[in-house]
Length: 477
Image 1: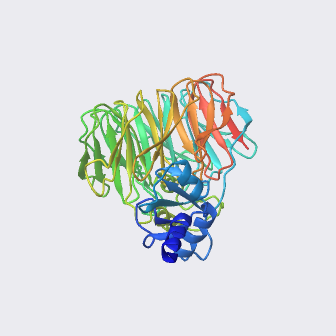
Image 2 (image 1 turned 120 degrees about the vertical axis):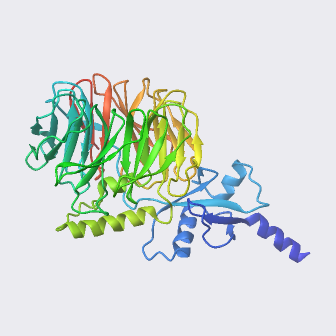
Image 3 (image 1 turned 180 degrees about the horizontal axis):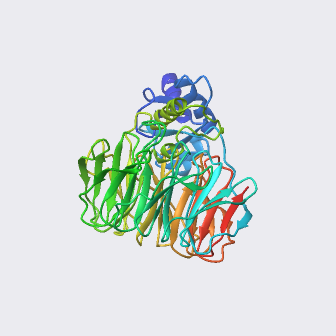
């Protein structure tokens, strides 16, 4: 009798749980955890089980819902049976916290046509923009005034990309040429890089942990080709041909593979030393518009992190970048997500399989932009259906829809700590979304027309936006 009573009390006060990482790898075996335990107690437990010398913050998820209460409350509210083991996923959180931007700190005139693209440098200290007025502009973030106007393009500047070491800026135009700029002087370095016959749709640099200083980048074009260029040799070293229609996006991955998406409905995977095609990813029923890598944020920022540390040599930078990349990757394969005109997205693990890991459906219009959070735990997608959707970065499962924009959403950007998401829309507003609470955190009106481009600085302190009203806006907290 006593044994039964004890067993019963054990059942009522504890619950059998299995802790796993986002990849599904268990942390030890199933264990009984008091039902009175909440996120703080679970955090202590995970730090202990992982032998973390420095205590790290974690968030906990059951069935894709964040656990914010005691287990007992959760079980009652969700009528969960405690007969079988409860699977709890622990997710490491950034140790630093980015505050949401909430005010426009300056509106800087300068461009004489629409601002089409904006990008902060990898260390967050500089900002560049490209415009329909054919110029690239560099802005002084301390004084919040124009710094250099870079002239040389003969048509709209559609794409810009900073090298991950921050030493070079590349811009691509509607005429198909690419120009290299020295951000320190605003001067063009060398002649235009020519070869593409139609406009440039994307630019991506070789990661600095693979090669430092940065020399090679890849561009994609409406002409159906992607080209690898060497900025020291000032020429195209490899042409990636094979797509039968426009190449819409290109990404240079952390393992040295290059991914291209196209209007021919395929994604091609190339190795970057000789430009051999090694895999083709098929599944989309219409144009593929956008690609994102789970490692993209750490590839873009290279050695730089929120601490603002600077580096004295290319070797030191390469070492720091490799350390950051490996830490972010962990044991997971590099993932790729694709967004299409067929309203769907696919999640791929191209190193593992040519078949998609998941098909992500729910958007009612074409998917315009996809982006993994800096920690790789989330995927955000922006669509012409006026919504932003949030998905699980490991499984592709739908998590939440953010509604509030009254026009198509053109571009999204993440805060460095993966807790906030920024969106810019045709409705002339920017919005900041809280990932954990899954709701609007800040509404940022101010532009007088469509917002085409948004970026959140890697140091987390500033947001830049540009659009049809020709001004560049900086937002702070």
